[in-house]
Image (tube, rainbow, N blue to C red; front, side, top):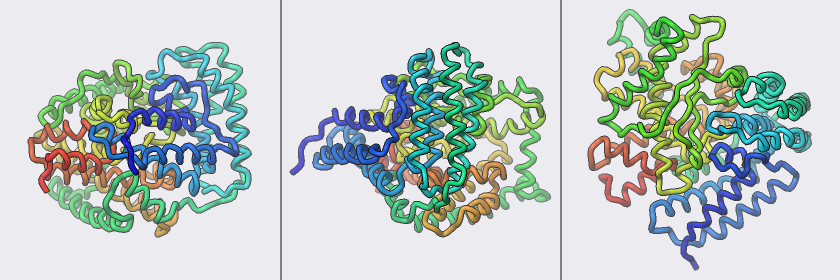
Length: 539
């Protein structure tokens, strides 16, 4: 027997989620959890499963709602709860030391970012004071638990870096107060003790298995293919794009390979550090102007390019510290801050690293202008309450992973979209975009083959190097893949899904993109379902 869906269950779902993930609440802009740390006791997982089962019992016997927002909310809650239950039983986050280090670090950092101003000093001191107990619980919980060594190394790196931050650079924060010093010192000691306690942790295979990954793909992402079918698709595309890059390179310069042409892009950059900084906004403005016929840009919500604050400059390197972070959907303020990392001692390396092609494609298009910035702004007006916040950047990644096919799919898709704006890119930059696309197909292969047991971590790293990933990124990329199954395949598969939807759209181009973004942070497959339901797609 089914009953009517009650929209108030969203409040109960969020209360459950925030109880076990209060740092997510801080990033979402829900301030009542700002003094809290995640529970990590011996009873935590059983309590979480009990709460999940209670919510599922209320949801599963309800009718599909008529209203779009309610329909998407119900669908997202069911998908997330099913996946969270499976994870709690078979792949619990409480067995991952890097989950503890990330939550602990960002429990503090989340309260120090510009989006959190003014700082809630009592909440910050509350979390600093609670960190020793949280990390002691982590050490006790992990004792004797086999853990992939990549996860251990990441946790130790993060904990050591955070200890240094709490001892020194936190005092550089513009709102630093003397009463932070002592709890920060004790928290720093706790981070160091946690890192030391991880020495000798027994090793484990990071693979989640084909069944688990299949459920991530089907339940969270709504993808219609199996993991092995996705591998076949991505491998075919990866091979094809290698040939396309070679053809594009010959058309640009028959005497240089694609790699040589791409390497030359590092030499095309502004002449001074100040001009590099200005170029971020300059290209943002140009992308908005030239992309306005393709998608309605978000100009009502500010994007403020700033040099990264001194207190964060060291800690940003070893942590999952994003230069652009989604604004807190529940308390977005008037705009977002976009950090620009200042130069170190090697100014020439800074200029080359911030070459025109990278600033244009990655910073001003993918993240800024009509990329994530416009997408996040539009999401706050979505009819689904959860779609307004599902794509929140949290301590380890997106709050609700299933939103990633649309979120990351859009940001990668929009890079290529501006090829349709005549003159925006040079031929060399279009070649770079093809390399980006090929790397995303490569990431599908690693994401899946690592977790279904076809590749070892070493084989995955070797393949990333072959695919052209920067050597310094390779190990970290594979570790992240291993911790978050299904989190890298969503980029390329998301782009492919958007392309397929556009081919079936019955209206004009800008209306398609505006409608796509209007759904907020939800799986792309659900957008297809809703567009079909509304009669907007050809069969």
